[in-house]
Length: 382
Picture 1: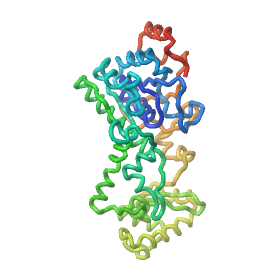
Picture 2: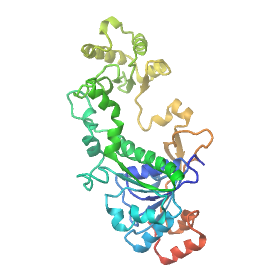
Picture 3: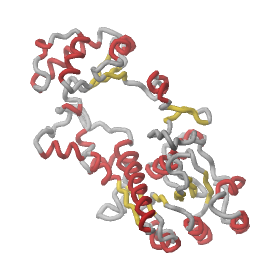
Picture 4: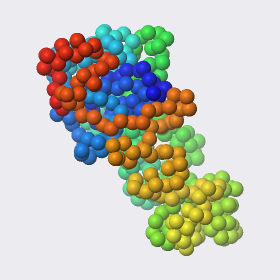
């Protein structure tokens, strides 16, 4: 099920953006086989395995890729694959014998997806790094935070998951489509620095035109404006507002019982500190739930600031099925939605077990070939 049904992808197991990209492709219906290490590397991932949600929707086998026999098995699997995902440092798969040259030699139409922080080329290509470093280099981190404060360190969404996993996924889909016409594969070099910079295109344009102030927290979209921010309520819970448009702003003033003449013209930054005080006092008059009952569903651009525990319980997200339960674990559902080729309900993350080899390799190798490779002892229990 799903629009990518029939697409087959080999994932060389890694951490962060690689598994996220593999999850998104599997959520869309692709058959993804994860080649797990004999001793999987985990970073900040909860145990047991069912909580490692980015590993959902695919099966796995365990191989020691330093074993030439294991490399030969991967190359055999790639003969029938549409794509491969790898997230090692530049040069690692080449040393293993699984670089683009070797893989495209056995399957010329293969899309070889590579995800790194710094990219395959450049002075920093082989250096270690993490999400915070990649978004720092691109100017993104410097722009996030409140006035007079240090940059706020965001979740690893802007770099790893968006600039990395999402751009890798888009690139691989584009290359798979092109390969259907040309019958030729290619390498997709997805660097988190490239993706994060690309995501900031709008803001680079604003800065170039002089419409973006370099000081953090002094612009409309970075908490500088009183009408695009969060406020504590009487119960200390938070709400968010964003009525940028004049008519939406006017609606909110009516609900807050604020006279427009008291705060001055909306888009004049000189009025923002005073207006912020009026807004802060107004929101303190009620609990968050009372504001939700008054403002949700209106055009004032309002939403409560919910926790990971609260969000799945919100009526709107429940009505849409934005969150689902898999193996007793609440988690985001596959996105986006498709009306003709809907995705299947996700399966829980699965370990690479010796007993599960036949199931994992079904559709990749014949029964006789599976027996052959099992007999070699190359496949083990992760």
